Length: 328
Image (tube, rainbow, N blue to C red; front, side, top):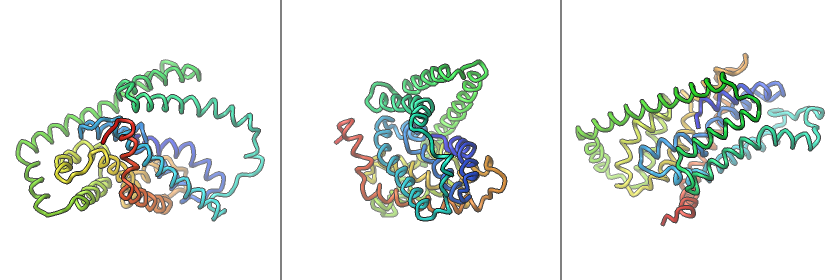
């Protein structure tokens, strides 16, 4: 659920391989920059955990609501990549036969060793949270314990790795903790001075209906995504909108899922487009910012399409929480 980490990792591992295979730079960089943002929406999303804390909404409900929209968006990405590669063969040329002709047994062994263990761990953590067997904190503890077991199984568990993991975890936790403290103080002072009441009166005096307020709020969040990270937006600015949501009869769970999808879009939107700068920092020489921007434009269109689909078919976000938690 951390965009910078995802884009950086994919930029280091996947982008050089695609460029060596002859993929066009805008196409390859666009795929990496866009795919790295999917963790904002697809559970286990850190953004949704913070939103649940700020909005007072259960994280399992948010995870259930984000599941179908997240995989719908990933599916749209997948269809676009396949269609583009098929229709424009020079964009993503096929590998030589000797590089893709592996025995089925070799492929299965690679999947069993590399993908299945970590995918199983993630699935078990998500299922335990969704069905109510564990809270998000307990699920995180289970995931951390499973990560230790996997590291030991891969013979990578040593004191250096453990110290680095603990340090990075503490640094991220401290950053989020201080943001929560600062945002709580800001929200408290803002409310104590009458700011929330004044803002509510101003918004209601504009005579907006439910859907107009919804999209005005989403537009403001989108613009804030240029200069700010999602943590600052979620913790500092969203508390200004949340008291107004009940006035306009908006479900906070649905609002949170659309907000997460919206912030993905802002990560891909010039002139700032944080994903592009994350990728540029680790990209091989000869990759330029304007090439990354060109590659991201089609994914921006896909993001807008996904937001439109979610708006027209709200049951993509509402159906699964209703089934799992008997919400009427």
